[in-house]
Image (cartoon, rainbow, N blue to C red; front, side, top):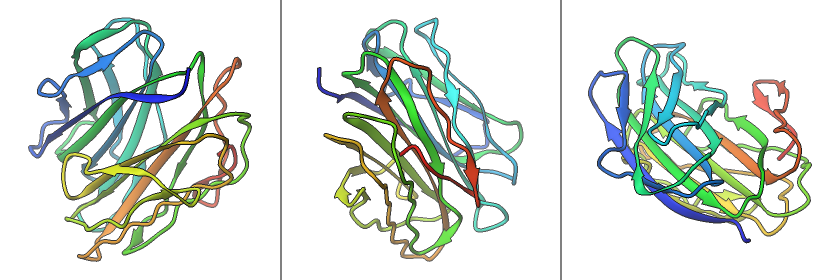
Length: 236
């Protein structure tokens, strides 16, 4: 079965609560689907996702590396979580994201269910540095032997105008991730890509961060790459 995005759910909350969910736009999931949840928020340095849960029962989400914007702008953070669904529903899945305590504002999230994997495994989590105006995010090498699902999430503390995002030099499918301060984009490759690049143009020249992940078909456990010079390199 070919890899395909089954459904997309977008949810947002601007208040200071440290938890929010997609009750207004629930996600359709079938057993065996890969679920990827991508989140942007603004908070103090060191903030992160503490948990992602759903109301299916039996699903455990793995958290990716948080990209902390540091003491810049509104301190934007981005982070991903994923799991393989143990069961499925029909547009009735509520996903809840909980962030570390404290004032957490301008929360945005995009959740997607992805079909076509027999046993999806992580090929790479990688992050950007904190950039102004434009900054590429790259990885090199791959352990995959066939198609991959590659997804990325860019977040900023101000409204942005985005260029067409690319992954491996190919235009990706992109959409606002709950607001003009975020961009969610993905690419389903027909073969492993050797690099992934996102270019974002920010009209206000505010700082922003990106997290991304690539998923492959594999019969073995997921592989998480090592960290080098502030970026996650390899396995992409």
